[in-house]
Structure formats: C-alpha cells, structure tokens
Amino acid sequence: MTFSRNFSRTASGFRARAVHGFGVRAVHGFRARAVHGFRARAVRGFAARAVHGPTRRLTKVLVSVITALALGGLALVLSFNAHAATPSGAPLWGTLDTQTGTAAAEDKAGVTMAMFEFNWASFEPGKGQYSASYLATMRSELAAYQAAGQRVTLGLGTQNAPSWVFSLANSTYVDQDGKVSAEADWIFSAAVRAAARGYFNKIAADFPLTDFWAIRLTSGGDPEMLYPGGGTYWAFNPSALTGAGLPAGMTKNPDPTWKPGTAGLTPAQLTTWVNWYVGGLDNITSWQMQALTSLGFTGYYETVTPGSGTRPDDLTQTEQANLDNDGTTGVGAVWNLYYAQIHDKDNVIAYISSVADNSGANDTCQPADATLPLTDPDMDSWSATRWITRIAAADSLLAGGENPGYGIPASLDTFYTNTTTAGMMATAIAMAKSCHFTIFYWAHDIHLHDGTLPFTLYTTDIAKIPG
Picture 1: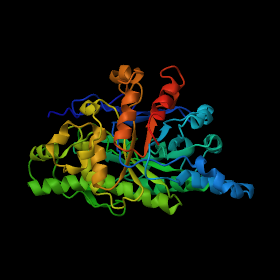
Picture 2: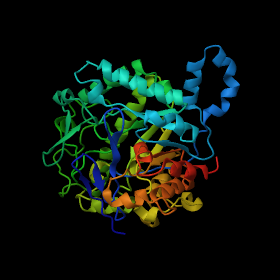
Picture 3: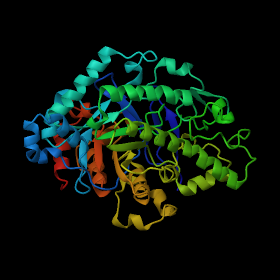
Picture 4: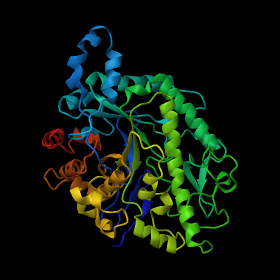
C-alpha cells in the first residue's frame, strides 16, 4: 500500500504526520503543557503499544497493610502503590497533564493514573542553578496526586532544554545538508548527556523515584523517541562524524563522507548504516534506563514511539533508493528495528502515542496476530496500534499508549469530540482492550473537564472493560 509518511512540524513544535495514508499521527500528540498545570506535551506522532494487562489498583490491598499504616509506614505503602502490578485484567486508566483539582474524583471513578511532568528549562534555568519556586510547585502537585490515591507516571520534560545546554560541545544535531536542528542532541553529544545526568540526579534527590509507577522515555531533545523532523538524517555533527565527544557506547558514523539519498554504498552497507542510525535511539534509551535505575527507580519505562513508522517492506524500498527521504526513516521511526535492538527489555512498555489515529481504519488486535512474522506485508494495512503491539509481542514487551490530543491534528477534532461508539474515545478504549494494554492515558485531562468531552464518558466506557 502507499504510505504518506510526511512529518511536518507545526508552529507550536508538534509534528503532525500523515500516518501512512490514514490520518495524521498527531505528532507530539498534544502534550503541550502549559507550565506546571495543563502541560500540552506535543505528542508528535501517534504510536501505541499493547501487550499484557495492567496493574490493579493497590487501594484494594490496603486492608492488608493497616498495621503498617498504624506504625507510620505510609511512605512504604505509597511506594508499594507506585509499583505493584498484576499481569492480567483491564488496563490501568489515566490521563495526560492530569489536573490536581480533579485527581481525587478521578481516582474514585477508576482513573487511577496521573501524569506528572517536569520542564527542564524551568527547573534548571542556569547550569547547576535550580529554581526553588518551581521545586515547591512540583512538590505540591505530586503531593496532590498522592493524597488522591493515584499512581503517578513521571515525564522528565527533557525536550524543554535550558538555553545554556546549547552552548555545550556538539549540543545540536546536524543533517547531511549541514542544517542545524533546534533540538538538543542527546545521541551524539557526551556533554549534553552529562548535563542531563545532573538534572536526573537533582530530580531523584528531591523526588524519590520509588514514588513513580512509570517514567516516560524519549530521545531527549524530542517529546518522543525520534530524531528531528524534516525528512533528512541527523547524524553529521562533529562528534558523529569523527567520534570525538561521543557518549559511551556510541560509535561514529560508519560512512561519514556519504550522504543519504546519494549512491556510493552497497546494499549491505546501507543496512548497516540504518541499523546504526536507529541504534542511536536504542543507545539513548539504554543510557536513560541505566541512569534512572542507578538512582533508585524500579518501575516501568514507557518508550514513547509514535505512528506506524517505516515498515519492513517500505525500508527495503527506501534502502534501494539510497535512503532517500521517505518521511519516517530520517526520524528513526523504524519500530521493529528499534525494539529488537533494546538490550534490557525488563519492565519496558512499548508505548504507542497514537492510539485511534485513523491509521489502518483503527483496526483492533486479533488473537492470530502473533502467528504472523513481522515481515508479512499484510501488516501494512494495520493500524499503528496493532503494528507496534505485534512488535512488542515479538520482543516480549508490555504495551500501552495514548490517543492523539484535541487539535493535534485539527482534522481529527470531530472524531475526538464524537461521544458515540464511533468516536475516538470508544475506539481507543476498544483498541487498548483488544491489544491487552498495561496502561492507557487519555489526552488530555483538561478536555474531560472543560466542556470538550464529559468526564463521565471516559468513566462509563472504561467501566465496561472487565478487570
């Protein structure tokens, strides 16, 4: 089938991409977040993963720890609540950009997961200089979710890099045409990673990572697990070309004098180059997991992968064209390669940030899906959700995700606000159920309370899913 894989960035920084001919993938699916509160985070792409069932609300077992509570073990209970999970049943249900004022009501209604996201630039406006007022605001926000009884997912907000980061060595991506990206380069810059590690250390010092059920992982400079957009390849800054200043574990561009879209490499060399390029996303994934685990985190890692990306037969055609612009390979969205190359798959949730994006007619996962190899061309017609779920199963990963946000893109707004069984909410919940998601987040919380959609629609729909 023909796929229109065009990732174009909108003025607000979200890349609305046409998802392989089926609707846009709400790039950065509207996670744009208004400082502290409704933080719309640019979902940028839609991708969703699904696999086993979720975790059961721990409030059900509080009776068994009454003694501990009486002895002042509240902190221990909260930590247990953050991580306990059962491998079967309905997904956990949450929202993105969860509002503190409605958290308690949501938890009582079965929406038990809150999304709590930092903004790096707001927290560390100067190198090593942290904002006390911002810290106080974030502590208050987290305390509100905990008091409501909700589990909490942490977003690191690294795409909002402070201005001083861009003065570091090799701090930005450069493509094959010499264009410099506005995103901080976490893949090829050891200096940027060192700065990020200081930021991680500070978060962990002020907020015990055991308080969080999951942490969302992106490529660092982007709101999702992607290189910058634009249709080119971002592997040509000085460190990528020479190897000087590369992070540990990264190797330099294997063919530094060659430019994608031009002849000069053998088919085997092209395959090696693509694996190396996508492997950069795996390297930054592993680096973040190792860093956060060393700081005490023991929960789930949600790797935020949007849209269908480049599927195997498409990649073959792209390589035959010397990696000419296909709209998705340049951002690294070759999800079967990405997930296969993750070294430590424990507690990783393949996270689809584009559930019900109208790709593949929003088809649901089927019991026979696991019998098909990832190279089967029949999968080309599948939705992004079904496709990434199949990849997750092949790599023994859990799956979860979120829907495209309102207005991202605007072409889906009518679908988003449709309150019938044909609307986005009912569709996304059905997809999450059929794909055995561990977790699903509605994007975004504010639109369940501002008149865009009734909150009761969400609670009524999820109540129909057996636990």
